Structure formats: structure tokens, C-alpha cells
Image (cartoon, chains in turn brown, purple):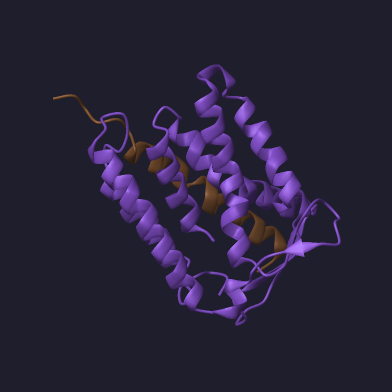
Length: 31
Length: 184
């Protein structure tokens, strides 16, 4: 794996889960 | 450490629910986002080491991961949230700096005190325990996620799908295992 590919993989690995986790962490609906 | 950073982010969010989730979760990985950009630009250097845990050697990461720069990045990142109050600024800033604190036990001594410092720190669990580090990180994830889920049950401000968030973190940890990681 090239350094560039490693850097890109690292960037994606730490950026991609953020919106998904933030969405799962959304406030609960009031009953 | 990889998924453990996200688990730490969930725990920080549970401690300060007013902090934006995206900011905390981006914050805990912010040093590695910078690292990725810096490596692509040639500012920092990494060498892959297939078969030797953890599968890569971090040759120069002083701008993204040194002790002083971690504090600087935490300050820069958190200042954007000053309008949300001191507690949120501190939570977001700590999220960024927590990356350094959690990398410290895992990394071999490749964490400089400041850019181009001759002193480097790191306890080196990755090297000392080529597979054991994964179980140690798993223990941390379970503790952090357990805290997050318990706090989420008592609050309506966050954690709408708390258990699923933890499942995702565990999946990320599985993908980053010594047996499955793309850099193993």
C-alpha cells in the first residue's frame, strides 16, 4: 500500500463514521 | 487505536450532551484526519510493515500527533464552539486531545513532545502485544459504550439509537482487528 493510499484510508476511516454515529446519537422523540 | 476513539467520543457526548455529536465524534479522530491529509501531502511519513504489528510504522507524525500540537489542534478546533458556552468548548477540546491520551499507551515511542523534538513517547502496546492490544482496546470500548448507553437511557437529549451506535463501533473494531485490518 502506498503512503498516499494509507493517508486516504486513514482520512476516510475517521471521517466516514462521523455522520452515521451522529445520526444514531440523535435526540429521542418525545412521546 | 481506532474504534476506541469513537467509543471515547460517545462517552464524552454522554458527559456533555449539549456538545454537538458531530463535533465530538469528528474531534476524537481529528488528529488522524489531519494525519491522513498530511501524509497525502507528503508532510508526514508512514511505512507499511505487512506482518509486523500493527502493519505500519509511523516515521514522522509530529505535526498531527505531537503532545504540543495535540493541544494546539484542540484549541483551534474548540474555539469554533465558543458561542455554545464554556462547557461545550471544554468537551469538544477534550475530545480532540483525548486522541493523544488514548494513542499514548498503544503507539511505540513515535509521539513527539513537539514538532522535531528529540523526545518521543508511547508505551507500545501494539508492539508488545501483537494481538493482545485488540482485546485491551475492546475492553475500553465496552466500558465507554456501557457508560454511554446507561447515560443515554436517562436522557432524551442524545442516544436515540445508542445501542446501534455501539454496535457500529464494535463493527469498526472488528474490521481493525489483527486478523481483518487492510494494513495487517
